[in-house]
Length: 336
Image 1 (cartoon, rainbow, N blue to C red):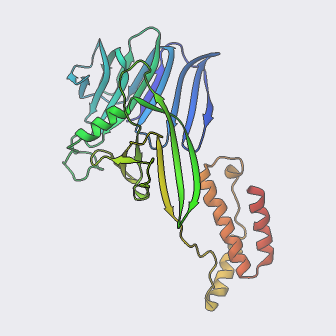
Image 2: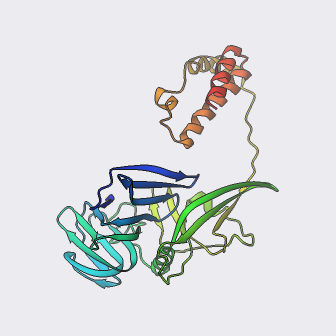
């Protein structure tokens, strides 16, 4: 059920990461020295956004489309070119519905077979933004992540409205900030954004998803207002992703993360000391693997590896194993 974005012409010959921050990364594809495609991946965004420059965009998925709408009207995916701004496609095989957003009055062509569906912008030299969003992942109630077997997601009017409205605002970058306040760390994310289609009259709010543990930490302070959408969203292995509309003018998320005491060192039970020392001597042979040392690890899991080493230092120090303490301290300082 993976979508592929490409350009029929010109063919991109290479790509690079042109910029990145804690929440976004921008990729650029070129044909020689000519810019063809650009996308900014945004953590928490329901949209995949690709900007094309003088190209022929094509999007495809390895599924047969079972229902197809253009600007709210049902059509057949039969290869005819029609003008549209919003495409909705339903796939019974995966119980999913996807929505594609385009500039107003864009000529598009849909073709489908048993195992593949292709959407092509039928314009020789198209320059503009294409957006894709998963608008329902329990369309008929057959997906294993539906709330209950045989029960599709319903009452999606508010969610669909927020998804349509948010499609007009493209996030370009994000700025993360921290500030210590009373009993909490004030964490702010400023989502820098712009209109996806400069000539469109659509005016919407930035629309994102929050993870379950984030929703309870949103601040109610003035200038950081957000609105939760009661329905919609998606269920996955990490829980329910809560739809969030940014209603403040600054495009901000603000969390108040409670400050909690962390008991880093505790007194081991005297009777367990021999067992602890034996385990520590075994762990003393542990170290970062070659793939980690070469940088093939992301910051999240890299941080967990460093935290593991720091914990071993505290245990070794508590057990008065000075050689192990010095060894891991040297390793930790080197990696940091």
